[in-house]
Amino acid sequence: MSGRTRTARTLALTAAVLVAAAAAAPGAAAIDHSKGHPGYCKTDTGVTVVVDFQQLGGTTIVRCNPQGTRGTGLDALKGAGFQIAGVQRWGEAFICRIENRPSAVEKIPVKGNEGYREACVDTPPAAGYWSYWHAGNNCAWNYSQWGVKNRDFVPGGFEGWSFSLNATADSNPRPRIAAVRPGTGGRACNARAEPKPTTNDPNARQPGSGGGNGGTGSGGDNGSGTDGGSGTDGGSNNGSGNGTGNGGQGSTTDPATQPSDGPVQRPGALPPPRPRNAGAQQAADDPSRNVAFTGGENARDVNDVVREQSGASDLAPWVAAGAVVLLAAGTTVAALRRRRARRA
Image 1: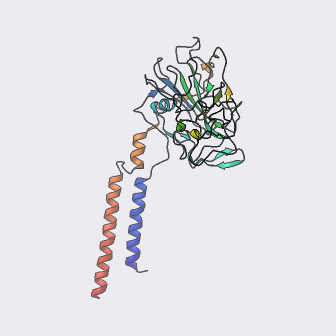
Image 2: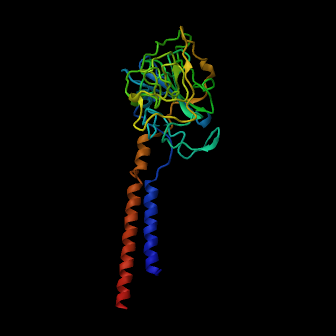
Image 3: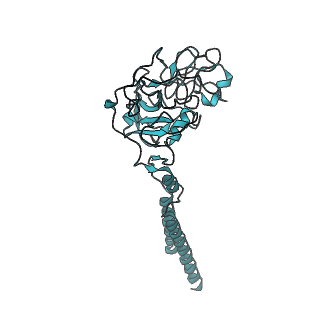
């Protein structure tokens, strides 16, 4: 290889590296500070959202979605400013990451696969997933019966997300923040009975969950519960009910709830539903036992991260311009050397 060819290629490679460095973005979590606000909701308007990373590590985050109109669990999570990712197969009907956790590169020590990495292609394994909870103010946390896109949040209440690692239906960890708004401690539990799902849209239901005729659908992701709901209105992602009140691995024969490639049959189905409390609601945990938490005030703003990921940071134009200059210089040097070689 001639000297001029090596020089041109070196300059081109340097330019490419600089462009890549400008466009690269850290895999950091970020809060959308334009939505919601840090800490608990102060009134019974809106809903307080708790994200507890549990064994993933990191600080528990408490934020308020002040939305005064009717909304789903997904609305609550997004409206509080949290960044989420669904799965390729089911979209946001199945929450796979919250604040980029678990990230695509971190190892999750699930039983039987200690080096597991979450790709968010299909539903996460039962040994490592985001469990979905809800509670009225001054009430105990309940493992959600319905899905994140298929149930309304309770105004003035709480939505909870807790990472469940190597747990069962009886040991799934509830959020370690008591469902008690400051200044309301000691009051009676305030929670209406959880309504049935707001839609029969199959995309708002747990993939493969129980369908018509009280099917035996799989246990719900991100929390589930039972109260004997019928097969036609039970089951959803991030929490499912089914006609028999029995979660666990299985499939349904109801074509209205099936994806195009047929029933889901996979090992390691998510934990079966928990029975809901009959009669009076249980009181909330003692807030004095809360773990340390933050409102995400110091987290980076999602818009800044997006700009970096798109190469639109303040530094990116200068780096790109420098890369163009280097490329032009390399081309010029190569042309001059070719011209000299011809004259010689």
